[in-house]
Length: 107
Image (cartoon, rainbow, N blue to C red; front, side):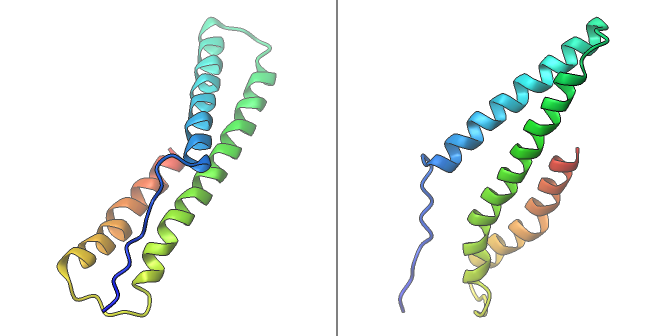
């Protein structure tokens, strides 16, 4: 029986882009929040740029999650799951992680 493991490289361009995107997203949201709290009236430019940054970041985040989760789901697609560890992994991803990601993106 040939067992293959899914290798995940932690330091690649996708993760670096996600880290940079999350930093930009955080800085942009803090800038808009501070300007709103101080009562500036002309912050439409910052709000529009914040929406653009957040849209790009969320789209790239969804793409990144899909490329990580697709090999895991395709591995179990045509096989009967017998081991408890594989079954727990599949259930954890489908039941616990997916709704948490959806709520995190919508929140």
